[in-house]
Length: 495
RNA sequence: GGCCCCAUCGUCUAGCCUGGUCCAGGACACCAGAUUUUCAAUCUGGCGACACGGGUUCAAAUCCCGUUGGGGCUACCA
Image (cartoon, rainbow, N blue to C red; front, side, top):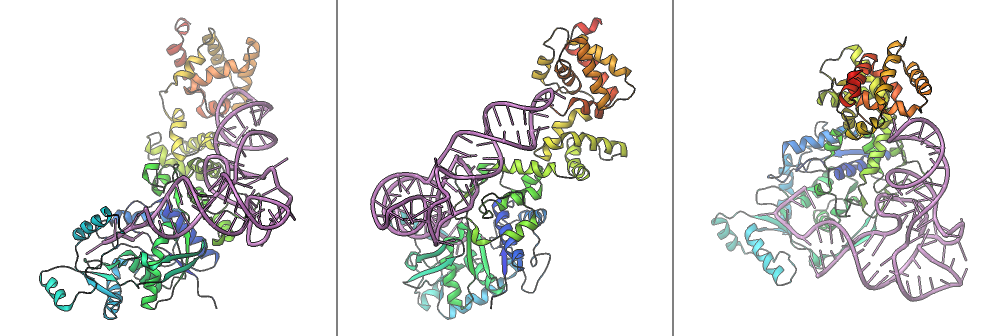
């Protein structure tokens, strides 16, 4: 009979929630949902100095933003909590004292500084930098003498002397380590907190985790943990080590490669659906020749299979994320896009806090024009500023190109007249006016269109001119054409 | 250094387990063309990879060994 499927995400709150962690969380989530199992969130906050409340919050925010809801964990409760390791100290002490009485662990009185010095010496001598076993066999009198001195002690696990430790990784297959490589590692720090290896083992067992799905950087910790499970007689979960997320230089993805905090992507206007889809494809793909890569959460859950996860590291390809985000942005309903873009427009001061209905319609019309051009929501303000501002930011290149022909002033003046006379100011009527004028002047429509674009938007590129002018409105267009002429075309002053 | 893991286009990958249908398929990026008032989007086409060397075999991207390369770990961090 299969054990109940239970997986966990066990981040430590020691920094902004990382995209790599997000991917690990996603794979755990997909595995759990695919098998109708439980997805547990456990916070590994056993590092007193590095853990911060902000980091903790960023974990919650990040997971929620991606929609990776946990079935058990902080804020949700569950039978097997608490889910913060800092609240589970008595449990760890219990297991430690059991190991102590069984002499499978012992007190170590060496200080970090002493250890560091000795390690350096070993390194210098070209030897393995394992713990030298100084406190391994302390007699009772020596121990109490050290206690008497007020020395704090840590607890070390007594490694079995020989043999090998092996396990079958769901992604990599058989992995073997020589026990002789391992040293007596610390399981309980002198501050009374457990170390990662120990706490993770105790908790995974007590929380009845069936599958440990984590990054490849956890692979070399596995033998230590396996030995721990065995020594405490705890059930051993299955392991799956995910390939790492890499930077452009193929080293483990870190800040020096650019943004790694999930919140930065969110703040730049990456959509959670895009992020989720993109992350899922890093190290995993459906095994088909010609497979669609745009996959919804439901499709991901349905297709996900841990066995088809790749073994090799995956470079975080920002360009593909951007493309994918553009795709999701394009398929977002306009009303929703308004909601999504509004914060960015407000933040840049282009749109005020309160929004009248007509104002809102304007925003909507503007977004309809740029929707298929945006890759990030944060692109919206710079791309649409001329729709909201009174004064224009003229792009130098666009302007100089627009005023190249000597008769540009006359053309624009003629166009203004036509525009003024239009009964309706719609993209159709504007187009009609522009094209017929061009024909009358015996020039290509482009000769009229480009200067006009420069005049009304200040830019050389953008949405179609006619629809853009309709959204801008007649008054603004006429005003801007006049302003453009007096600013850049000297012949207009006299005329 | 030691140990562990990994190795198909620039990048993400399919194929590898169960050798032949693969002078290797898809996606992003790039280039060209189409469309167009620009940009974008879209469509079409193109460029582009089995790290190397040995085996095994009638036949190897696929199996085995080695080399090289890359990465990870090597804490009283997680």
